[in-house]
Length: 349
Image (cartoon, rainbow, N blue to C red):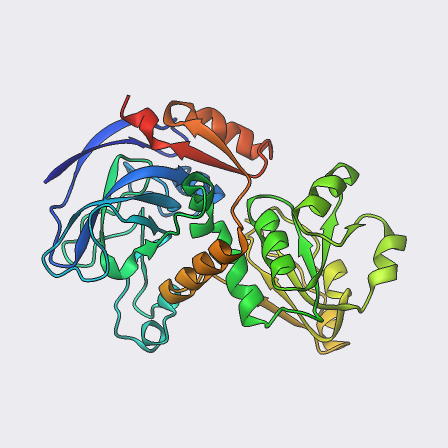
């Protein structure tokens, strides 16, 4: 077994604290990865506070992992020690169902194995995430990271990047598309960068005039105050696609009215109260309201390669692991531009 240092939650709403546990020895197709950086996702906070009912403590969060391979199992063929690699939200799936065979492991019909708060498919032990010194993962769920990019700023691409890239790609956003982005946070700032790189006309919806300058810097062609009826009226019925990245309760109907005929609005945020939908906002215009969940391993690699080609990374603030609880409090106040990333060297001090 491999002794591992980490920070973990030991109960709902408890502060994260140092925790030592053992990772498994590598199986035939496993890689042992020394974790260099781990992004901090709002999902981490939801999970450790048991807001989604997945609490099985202790929980080591973290699914935006960048590190280097230190050991490889005897059957590994894609990677070697020294390679810079990433691990995202999944570490396994059944690999046999129709969705897995279509490279959509996130929709595995038997349930994907998530990087933390899941169960290993072979021995049933809890999966533990990237707020730790190392991780052991099957090579089929490991991504190759370009050395052209800052590895710390790449880490959030493993969740925030693919969560926004996948729906933009699926709904064929590109040149000639008018795209709206709702929310300017960890997900929203990546949506702006990616939609701009796809060649779309990109509009940021916000309720805060102070976010205008940042939105334009990140790739928006225009910023619309969604609480200003006159500004909204100017854009009614003009969007091909709208990506809603907000996880707080908000009115979806005002944005559905912004869609062209046959336009789609896709949700990637997950509010804790169900929205109320006006059927007329869908019927008149044949509008679609959809959802999207991260992406499969092949698409995640495609996204990483696209970002390397276009020089796209997340805007980050690096922190020490010892400051994670304060970072959570700041994240609740949206006091981060736009993603915290833990420098895991602080756990080895």
